[in-house]
Image 1: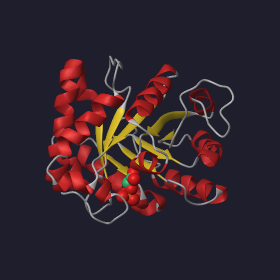
Image 2: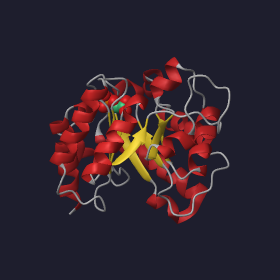
Image 3: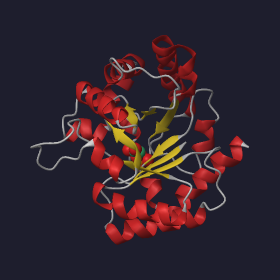
Length: 254
Ligand code: PGA
């Protein structure tokens, strides 16, 4: 899976053009082999969704955030049902930027995951350690505690109901990537944790790497035993770079 996180960039017209370019570029893609998701800003979901519908584009629509209540007096928030209604099948939650700037906790992430799964939207649950934890060698225990918090009381049966994205904070938007071995160390530990929680179905949960992923380094990550793709920030704003990553991964899958 390759998921693009457009973050808070561009305007409505640019979002539609980017979606159209990605659609034109990926015409031959078989979504059964490599699943592609784009996550535009909230205000662009409808326009990007229209491009996907009109073109029968081989990628899915995702949001970057949600609130966990169904409806009511929550000024400025967006419910899972509202996202569903716009055609979202995925939603990023717990991104480190949301944890850092908007004080999102593991408990919030858990409530959001459950609310999304109640309406059959698949959460892309982001976890990842700050640089201090990495330097102290505590990355695995830090990230596993985030995973445990996010998945509290959540059951899965097929494994594709949720996605986990491991994004070491020090590698996001910095141009500094983790090495594939660094990423595998933590993602392998996440897989083991999921196996303990859910049994063999855990092998079907997609676990992505995120943090300065680009065409030149993507195959190093997906070549690791437990890494099933990438959550891409900066490089997802460029249709050529994003599609090149998808094609490299797709070629590798065949
Ligand atoms: P980046 O962002 O690819 O620009 O490092 C990744 C992310 O934050 O999801």
